[in-house]
Length: 120
Image (cartoon, rainbow, N blue to C red):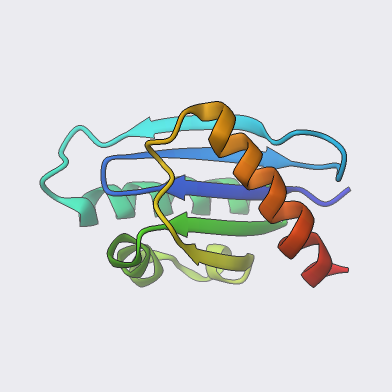
């Protein structure tokens, strides 16, 4: 069964969620804070390294990245082939500071309406 990871982030924090079945709610894989908020590129590189490691170990098949436009551009600059090749969708929106139940609901809707249809 295909595993879809969703990275919801901004320059301050990130959460990675995983979804395997259409009817299952996305599960939290990890939450990550940026202790050095003054340098978003360092945080982008840290997230990219985590995703590359997971991709190399077969942790996910496809990736959705949701971030505000400036931080999304930073991420796209630092992603390497193992991650770039798995990106199914990028969304320029900042919901990383929302309450977790709202993030999960938004991610589930995105996966159901956009990602699964595109991959079908």
